[in-house]
Image (cartoon, rainbow, N blue to C red):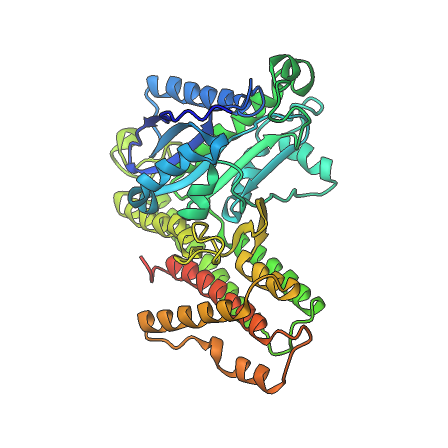
Length: 457
């Protein structure tokens, strides 16, 4: 083993925005590899470089995005996402307030079959862009969206989530609460991290005509262009709320099957998801009104006006400022899902309470990871309950002191549970810790709703 200590270097390029130069869409890929790395990461590196080259040609001809686009080539990803993590932590004060989204590409092509993962507010955007990209593995005229749906025999393909820490999106989403997405072809492949992950294998088996590379590059460019150029950010929090509602329903079913006491309730989650949905619908209506106002009163300065969108849509200065305010709430809402204490005592750096890694698998994504881990602790009896309950009580007291509102985790539900005696798993304190995690996740969702409502900016 080579134990040399050496300097790592990220390479960063910026295409400044014309209207909001201090708002950033970040496109990233790591360039270090275990051996030759034709798939991991060079297929992704190729796509990132082609997207940068295309945008560079457009800029040379006079085009500019509304918002700045940052191109990032990360070093030392294979050693624990070091390059991206250090950069994100070093620039956290700026990124936390000004970064709109992070678009990742790692193994862009490792075989056939298209896959996309994202935070839910980006799902519709990714499906929309995929409808405009040709399917490299389908008949002439078939879109990537059509091929993607046909592969899974559905009318609308579902996206995965980015809760794990397996690539460079982790620092942006899991630590800073920045919306993120990742697209690629192929799943696990036998050449992974081996000497056989080379150009010969890629050109012979994985992507002989490199059409899959082209499709991923077009996806990345299309998503970036929309995020950087649309007057109204293409974020859909109604879809986010709908996904969370389904996650809560699955959680409720799992709790029942795992012997949770009747006093344990997911009602706080249901209430907070309902509020998030109402806030999402309200901000959508607000944006529609601003767009209508903009259309009826086009800016008189013409195409040179900094208030114009990258696609040339008109906007009077007043409506553009109003839409900027809407956009601030849209991209900052993801921060609401973070908790400063982290997912749990085992994962304090990972702060996203809605989608995060599983305790025993950094690569896997779990909805409500803190709740799931607390349930696993009860079922498996692997950790001390008193410590979990003490942490619950301390956090409740801290929250009450900060907000002046008494948190209800130790009220009627707990007293009812106490009066029932021991629960079916003989671990009363463990189920109290689960209830606490439910309250924590509910508060996180409510924070996101308040940001959309404009109450927490």
